[in-house]
Length: 196
Image 1 (spheres, rainbow, N blue to C red):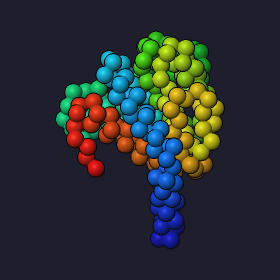
Image 2 (image 1 turned 90 degrees about the horizontal axis):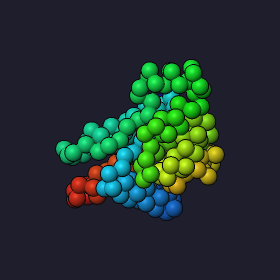
Image 3 (image 1 turned 60 degrees about the vertical axis):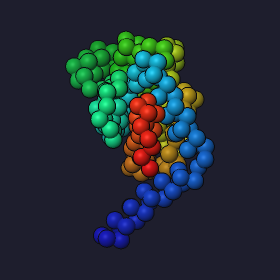
Image 4 (image 1 turned 135 degrees about the vertical axis):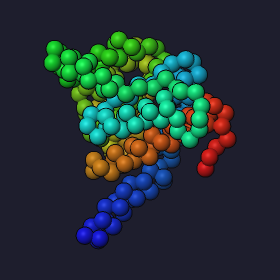
């Protein structure tokens, strides 16, 4: 069993090492952080969406902005779109689960807002529709996916496609990249000296 545990940890480390060596990915993380910082400076908000474990990750990252990350500071306008269960169940029942996020984007999205979609396959129907709605409004789209980017690749202004096809390894890297973005945005927006 210890050998299996070691192999799982090594697989996670291997994916992160690939990200570390990927200059294009690191540049995308930097540009995405700058875009989110600018959105907040312009008075816009960041909305997150995902399904299953990715919904939990979406809620986690939204809380890093609206709560705090490293520093006690003013709350930033960020929210995960699935937290209203009455809304989710009503729209899924009355329309379709595929529109639970796009309908919310249509209602509260504004030009210059950012929507972050997390999907390990890059093919989640409700996130694809959310990105389509966001683009019509003039929002910025950020896709967190697995290796291929799936269909989200063509709808993402910023694509963070983790070099893996293994769902747990992808999700672990989504949180890593999300935390990096949260830290960079917090430091830039509030003029905090970089932490390491």
